[in-house]
Image: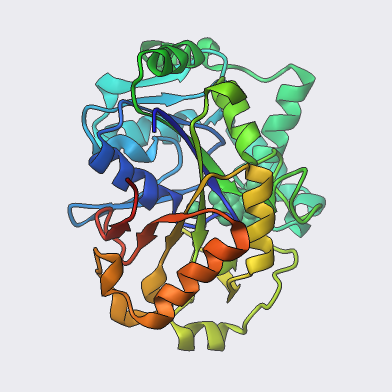
Length: 332
Ligand code: IMP
Ligand code: MG
């Protein structure tokens, strides 16, 4: 597994944080590099505590893991410092000196733009921050006094780790359906969220990747505006136990049954070699907490088989509960 890219399939919130935290603990990851920005929250449940991480890589749960933020990421300095403190990772986290900075003014621009409000953005200011970067007026990490102790060349570190055969995870954020290029434009985020773009933000070339693991949730959710095929009413979502609120903004998440067609599209564009399915227990409550594939009921196994058949890739990790370790691991 030396270098694995983790990418979301749908509209984010597939459970990438949970999958990465499991891999960190189980595989003893050496390096985890995060991309994207503060608009994405990765939820990690570990030792009875819940973390909704906007900046710190989800692999922080394994205390030997080096944590990095890539040059293509956008750093929110306040949130970064707050999370570094909460997760106690000060001595093992680095920020690429050329990662750009997302500021309060970007959030104000995001929240006051009628156009952006109409797209249902998170309000963190990611679109305006990226606009500034494209204009080449954005500040970058090396310009920020509070970030001086953390500065590094993240791409150099990550490539050296790959050269040394270390275990590296490149942490993507959001999902393919929010991609600026491949998603439900214009109801998308301001960057490409495909595996190739995740690698680009981390400074990892396509020949250096061994695995692309696409993360599916057992049903689909979406926050903000834009189409959601098969969307259920809130009442129906609650009845099925699928109703969620956003980890980042607290907004209601809309929900719909799993789409095999979209799953296939995501697997193709990500170039996925493996898949994870999270929240299987939301569809099949009797599998809650299962750690062995054989413990799953017939219908649950049929669902997994169908995903494998339609996407052509193996489902290697299956989430059966919120904790990082509530997982069926079918690798090896
Ligand atoms: P922005 O990324 O804040 O500009 O928002 C654009 C769209 O992407 C909106 O529909 C947001 O709800 C959605 N979005 C952005 N980040 C996430 C995420 O991490 N999870 C779910 N939806 C997201
Ligand atoms: Mg999220």
